[in-house]
Image 1 (cartoon, rainbow, N blue to C red):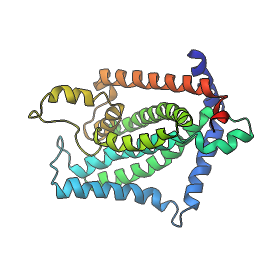
Image 2 (cartoon, rainbow, N blue to C red):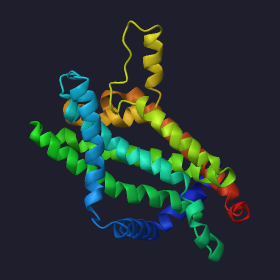
Image 3 (cartoon, helix red, strand yellow):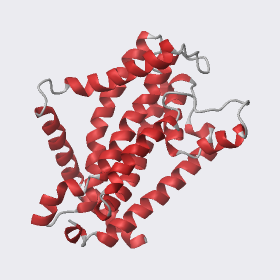
Image 4 (spheres, rainbow, N blue to C red):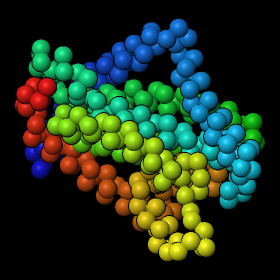
Length: 272
């Protein structure tokens, strides 16, 4: 187990420059495929947020959530989700999409999930710009607690990297994993506090138990962490139990991903 973790960490840290180069190349390739280029890095998340705001904020007349208007509350939470979702979905195909490279040269396969996460981090920054503009229009301005976003962005990166490591290997074993994950990600969004508070009312049977189970979702910690930093002036030290639980889950997932990557590192060509 420790040997596999050391193997993956060594490959990633010794190939940091290569990871950034691949991420940059793929990002620029996506822009070249589009006539408007970088415009869609801002337009796509803005359209998504605007759609959810129209449906839930306007049509359903969503009330304030913990003293915060629905639009700024939504855009901050969606900023975190806009990074996590594509990292996990694209992470499934991280190894399979590079089979031409893997079969022709000796390549550090374990760095491929990291390239996906680094690439999507740029899109995350674009989404954060949209969020900050929206927050300024709604009367929210930066303060020292907003620095907590850097910590929760790191949390999102580590979580997405750990999950992508697992899924990239499983996709090589079973191609249907990617389709399954795509379907489950749609469900996961509604079981996370992205577009709603993710808290069931007292009228629902076993609501206390279900609400506690909702908090077991690592995405719950990340999304609410973004909002805690911006709206409620709280830090990760204000809920140490949740912080400890999150990092234990990430370490377990990362360990599983490292074990799978190390076990099958020489067998990927045979799986094509």
